[in-house]
Image (cartoon, rainbow, N blue to C red; front, side):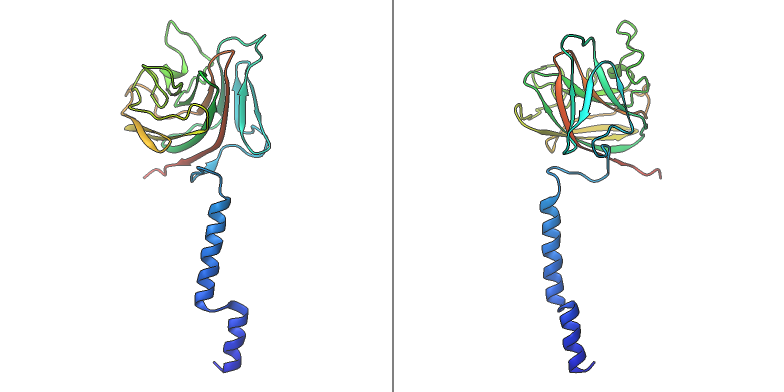
Length: 225
């Protein structure tokens, strides 16, 4: 290569050192712009719509401009629970959810509930936490604190921010369910072998006073071997 060609190449593409520096700056910029606590996988919220989801019960579920899902109730009309379920069902997956729950509020994340809360019957046990599993969001429950598989496996030493955002990472495998709260493993259980291994993802409004926010809802399905 002639001296003139070398100079032109450097002008057009830069030296290897400069290219590396630009690459590192770009990577840092991308990381800085990424949502706080964002995880790998597919975002289950698209724009300001709830396409791909279905509402069960009389809850009001909406999406803010920044993609935050808001679940709340009409205090004069609300009865029982309300759920927001994905229309799609999932087998083995990693799910990341960030949530803000009102003080003393009660909510949860449902997995593997094939009934989709449509066959609610307390005497026979046909409810989301019995058909599938509910990952509890309720810091003041001594028996099922946040991060627990409700009435299956209590969370151990959960550290929840009572007045700020928290994150749940749920690892669902055929032989084990693991739950991390704010990055710390709090629950690990094989679950009930009689229950389904597949089902939708659900978000809960527990009662008429419930108000809860969810964001960065991302899922990574595990490829079948």
